[in-house]
Length: 257
Ligand code: NAD
View 1 (cartoon, protein in one colour):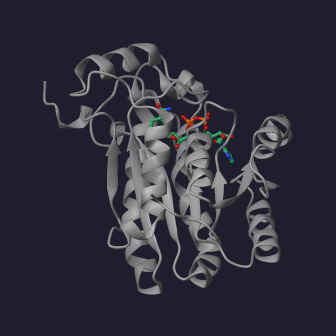
View 2: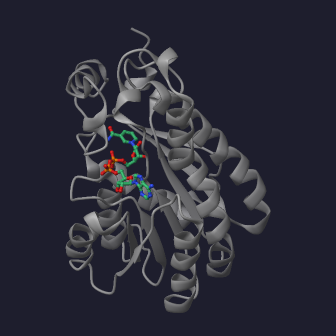
């Protein structure tokens, strides 16, 4: 029902087939969107290349978001190959493992800065670089991935929760800045999903179980449900939605106890 044929998007954050970014890519591709992918460093290149190869016409670029030069190279490549861009997907997060357990008070200056640079600032940098191409596609949008730990305290999520609060505020400020150019910026707040990044959080399996027991739908969210929400947000059906955080968590966040 959602038709993204003839549109193009770039997806940051595929590490493997369990990645939320890959779930999003599959829904976008099923709706007809042509995709470009980035991978973080040589270690992940083969994995991402194999997955990308299953989607005809897809493109691949290296990009570590701590490198301004790599970000610039990706968007130069996208301009050359695609000309315009309908969608930027930011599905990137990182904090030092030591900062994802124990006391938040113990977070080091370096750990705090790293988590914020990679998980929040990168959205600002990528949106700035993408804006001219998103404007050209008439008009494009941006989607970022977040988690409820930005609003309420989740044990061990610690500095990542603070970085997600920064990411969600960045979504609102970017939406206000880029709105007059026709560009929408939204976030999806997903319930817990068993991914590489999630397994770095101490006690993650317990979070997964707790969410499934407490959520109104009594289960965890699927990659397809997150991906389909991204396809909706990227489509003209969502043309009036910007600056929003949309929960795709089987209703978990509405529960008080
Ligand atoms: P994942 O490990 O599959 O993806 C995380 C991605 O971030 C990886 O592809 C990794 O390469 C990338 N990344 C990390 N540092 C980077 C850097 N310096 N440059 C470029 N890329 C970098 O895990 P995921 O769970 O799919 O995470 C995707 C997003 O979804 C993250 O923002 C995460 O916080 C968010 N999220 C995850 C959950 C969950 O339970 N898994 C829930 C809500 C939100």
